[in-house]
Image (cartoon, rainbow, N blue to C red; front, side):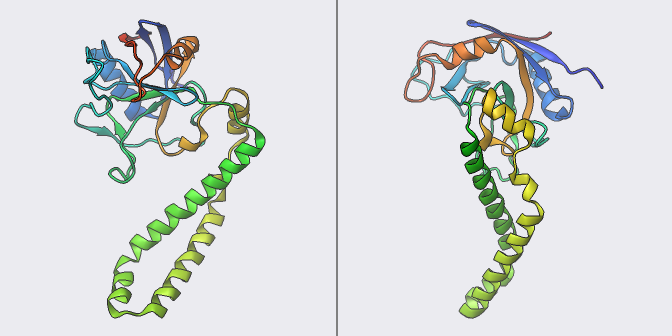
Length: 251
């Protein structure tokens, strides 16, 4: 196995050592380019939510006054999604790429610079079972939406002709196809033993799995991430005292 690259993220609250996965090469190489360019030096952790995550990488956050709205700053390009799921998931300490929402970004491409580190919380067996039910529903919704798109011309034709019976028959057909495909892909809505164990023992954010690219993890300095997570924040979830990324460098 090719050795995984590690970097030190040095902050004013301490140092975090991160490992970048080799099987998400687009994100790894982009992150390393920004590290080598010094892009992250001086930026802030601008969004912190307890039992969820700490986020940084907004390129407009350097020396930003406290009244400045942060979160939209980026580099003018995106990185194609690299979901290596369920191998990489949103366990505590996972390094993930932020992105804009599905409605404007259906391909779920990642922000060029913004990242987050998962803190999350621990889940019980019953909570994880409920989570799997939500994953199943989300899978069915995505299948049905895709089938609707594929049959858009036919749906519009039936609408225009006022054929309510035809529309009802087509809807039932698509629902049937959705159920069949969801059954064939049911493993996608099930948590692996590794996921289940991690979410029960160390915690994480399971509802983000397969939605945002996970491309690394904290290997040292989780106590520093906890300090960041515990900071006081304003209504925009920005720490009231700046938490600065002093420098990021290869380990």
